Length: 80
Image 1 (spheres, rainbow, N blue to C red):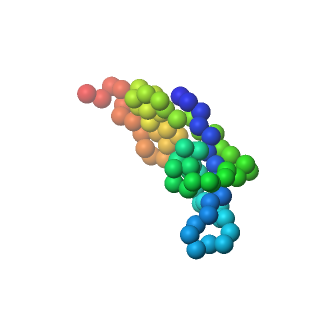
Image 2 (cartoon, rainbow, N blue to C red):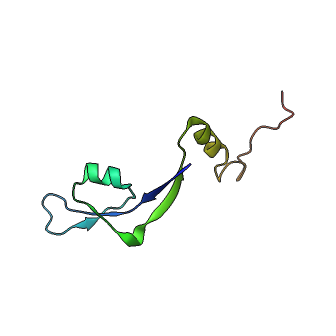
C-alpha cells in the first residue's frame, strides 16, 4: 500500500474576496486539478494507506474495521 498525504486546501472561489478552506480532504494532484493555485493547510495533514493493486484492495475490504463487529459477521467456515 502506498501512503498518500491529504490536506484541506485554501482556495479562491469566483465572487469571493478571500480564500476559504475546503470542507474535505484532497491529495495535491486532485486539488491542483480542481482549484489551480490552491494552498494546503498544514494543520489538516492526514496520511492514509491507499491500496495499489486489486489484491490489496480486496484485503483492505476484508480487514475493514466494521468487518465482524456490530452484528455484522462473516459466514461460518463450516457452512456449506
